[in-house]
Length: 471
Figure 1 (cartoon, rainbow, N blue to C red):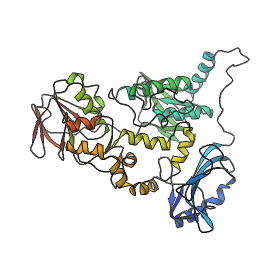
Figure 2 (figure 1 turned 135 degrees about the vertical axis):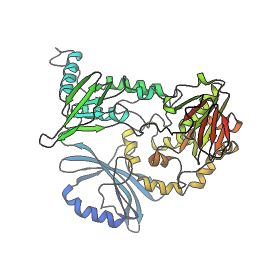
Figure 3 (figure 1 turned 120 degrees about the vertical axis):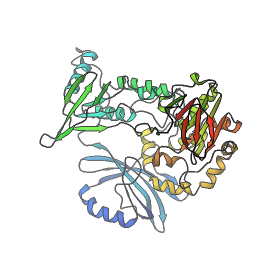
Figure 4 (figure 1 turned 60 degrees about the vertical axis):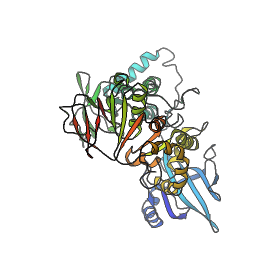
């Protein structure tokens, strides 16, 4: 993707910039230098305006224009999207995004006919033979059977690339089932639709934890993917330069299997291992301490004094659940400040970026086409508007003592996702509990040590506690 603060002639576009999964350049001199060295070798050709609904030319930002287009190289086909604006007698590009959508000769297969070998073989026989071949000699090993890993496997399957997915959990989807019970996605269903398999029309707007898990499991079956559960890659994988293959040992249950894929794809998620602080006094504390990843519901903590350390999405959801389940007291510990927006704010943004009736492939192209830093600069100009929109919610939170921000630079909640995958929460009901005092806020402190029946903070204040959750 290319973009420029001063704009550049619309005839000079190619690839690169800065949203997830893309790279890019900005400013005219960097773009010109890049294109001078790379454009001749690419052999771009057959540029055409895209006439699909959602990608055809349309007005943008007053006098500007946004449009999709298609193009070819010698061995590939691609899609692009450009934001243009007039500058005197010529059009100039605010940003241009280009992506490869097909490799010539390796296009996706599409749907199968459904009968095999002259209608003499059953599907069980056909898929059994395919599975056996993939398990014996996978071209690609994909580590992780979450959304990304399964998406890649489904795409590769359509390209006739033999792919084996390795998943540590016992059942596909367990990485969701083992999260806290009230978890629901905070993005609307149009945003997280899976490849080739849209949700039913009556699917919930915000998908609950267990429905995500079950849909992933069902996706493996309906897309005919080969997944090994209770499996993981052992340390020591190495690449054979002469054979141009990896030497990999996968532990599948109690059995070790040696495989030699050409490629390994790591799809193990955004987040790493739980962060569990080491706090003095843990050995004397008479209550329960654990990380939020181990929270399985608040029923067993009815009548207990509960402290949740952290002020993001997970903390808000857990505090709400503990209060609902009858905890004696619930306290959220907030060290600094948090960006909090209402779920309706997210729904409005999702409706613009991923509206009903528009295929997700088109929405993805248009989202990727606007560089993150350019989006961020435009969002900063609307900071006052964002504060005003959230005022009723923020009044509730401030009444309870929560400290608020509008992102690290005034650009809002959205960009904290890309910065740190945290530092914000999307409110679905915790704010009224904070306003009423059912969930209390302990602001600007950290836990200094645990004592027998409580915690002491670094301002030397103390609270009783039967439960401490790191969130």
